[in-house]
Length: 275
Ligand SMILES: C[S@@+](CC[C@H](N)C(=O)[O-])C[C@H]1O[C@@H](n2cnc3c(N)ncnc32)[C@H](O)[C@@H]1O
Image 1 (cartoon, rainbow, N blue to C red):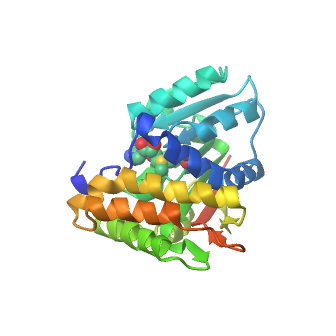
Image 2 (image 1 turned 60 degrees about the horizontal axis):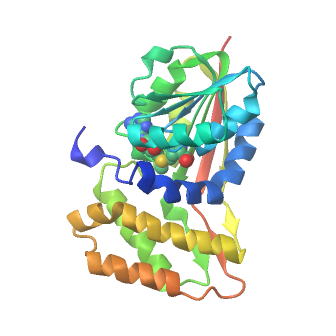
Image 3 (image 1 turned 135 degrees about the vertical axis):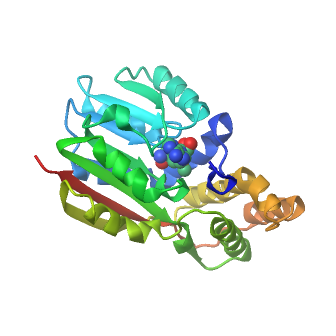
């Protein structure tokens, strides 16, 4: 893997708050989406790029004890936390697999549903990654993805620290090989999958206005800054002092009444494999 393609966010213990916040902010929409694509009681489900397993555990509960979730990630640190959390919750119908999305051949035609969230923007070859996931789907099974576009975050009224956070993090995305257009390209990629038909696509953009959710969002910006700080410094986008100053500005900013935060717009896409 080249340096350009390394996963730039923290993993393991250090990723817990970031991925928990992510799930607090996007989880409701993801669960609605997954319920809509059809979760079968007793189904075999793959959550690829599962992180610390927030959605994997939920999926395991939805499909019941006769079903099974395969939580897949290429980071052993993420998987260790995911496993601990599933054990703490007494979830038994889940297993953990250290694998790269670009090669899932061990699981050919294995799943009724293969799914990923916030994975494709981080991978080396999104087309290959989707093709690789597609191969793991059984006949009549479903392939589903949620791919976000960080450039669509917005807020009203505007505040400079928010604008600066997104300018700097998007600059980092541009300077690495992340495919920032993946949430658009995913439609063509899904349509090109030979054994699949009936591609359905929609958008979801969570909008938050409640004070406690806006606070979670502020925390999330700071946690993300910590997570990408090494890369920001290495690429001369920000210095450590500027990062610390920006975090203070984000946390100290008074939340005005009637503030609206538009989170990243998510493309939600799914299709079915032929019989
Ligand atoms: C932003 S996190 C999203 C985690 C989870 N899907 C969620 O929504 O909470 C992306 C995850 O993808 C994993 N990942 C990155 N590149 C990968 C690859 N090539 N193969 C498998 N997993 C990968 C990372 O380790 C990380 O856990």
